[in-house]
Length: 111
Image (cartoon, rainbow, N blue to C red; front, side, top):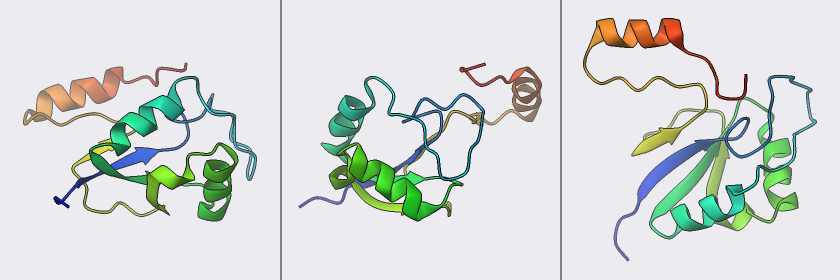
C-alpha cells in the first residue's frame, strides 16, 4: 500500500452546521454533503478530525453520523499533515502584506 498523505479536517463549521453559537457537549447536525465529501477524500488520503471540543464528544458525533470509519484519529493537537481544512483559516502564500490584509478582511462564511 502506498504512503497516503494526511488531511486534517476541522469539525465546527466544516463538517457540522456550526453558526458561532458554542454550546459545550452539544454538537450541531452534519452539513449536507459532508458525508460524501469525507468518503471521496478517504479514497486517497488518511483523514484526521481536529477540534477544540472534547475529543470523546467529537468521536461520538462521528459515530452517530456513521462517518467514524473514515477517520484515523480525532485530536485537538495540530499534527504534521499535507493540508488543513478549516473554516477559520488564511492561506499564507509568501507575502506578509497580503496575508495581513486578508486577516483584516477575514469573515467566516457562515456569518
